Length: 521
Image (spheres, rainbow, N blue to C red):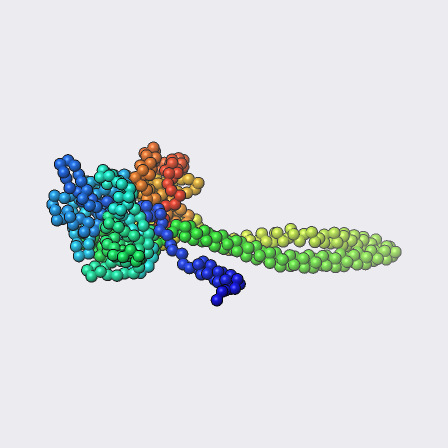
């Protein structure tokens, strides 16, 4: 039966509302996935034909320390079976390929640990300490062969640094295989992805991609990754202490919004407090004004009554003086006349000295000032506390975004001239104490700030690529950090020099660690 136009209209509205109410998939953080990708390598099984190096097969691996790499056991199985084959490791960013050696292999759970035979200083990936198992968005990172074929990569290009391929999907539950604990997901992988990391939206490893489910073509495709329940014991059994982080994965946009809301709440609280104080002052002013007006009315009445009394006395004394004058009593005339004159003068003074209503404001202000002074004198103001000294800084996890950094408490010794721990001078810019660290052995720039008044220590970490780190190191080489004790002018000059590095950094950091610092008693 055909539907009426009205019915169709409401069905369309209902369908649109259902779409709007449907949950929206969270997308991975591009900067975090990019940072994690820098620690991903191509693992190539090679053979030698004289001086020529020929790739036989390849998979993917990822760094768990600067010189140690995790991959699948089946990726390196050919090199295990044939001693004439070697293992090549090709980094994703800015380094030359090197040979690797097998440290440990576990066929049961399809894991293998490799070591580089030459220093590579890879960026280790962080392992999720509390990975989701049943749902959540994930990203596969690796080197699928079908992409290489589609791009027509030559043998030479296989050994050149190239960024890995990323693909997104969702966890579809934990489905242990027959021999090991695994994760089921829909982030596509292909031949060549084996051994690559499966990461969450913060770029933390939740599994090691291993194999895919066979599909008839029309069926939905699912893939399996070795879970961290297998990975972590394997690493520790081989004396590897990985970076593990179990904090919630949150975006910097969410944190920035949270900070804005916190600042807005504090602003509203200050405004409400100021408004309450103004209202209390207005009520007190109104009460005091009434009291002063009544007091002035009473004073005027008293002065007028006194003036009238003195006028009557003057009148009586004058009449008595006239009578005494008629009797010829000169002495009495002088006495009565003096009293009359004094009374008249007193009456005039009393009348003229009556307080006017124009005195209300002056008396009100004087009263309020006296009350405020009394309150100030009655309250002992706390003595200003010096900000220099020893602090213990504790991470505020609600205000922080941590993906790879340790979360331990930080001891901090602060000097009011901007010296930290007696050796590290901070720069002063617009009232903020800042130190920019550009290490030579780590692909990260840290911007550390300390606010001694608020007791807040903050670290923003930027995980950069090879070229970006080279630019930051070049800018850092342009100046020499001053020693402690150079004074405020030296601190300001240092702060200005650091701005050259700050201008090179991305708009947002990858990590933000906010610490609350309290003095050590």
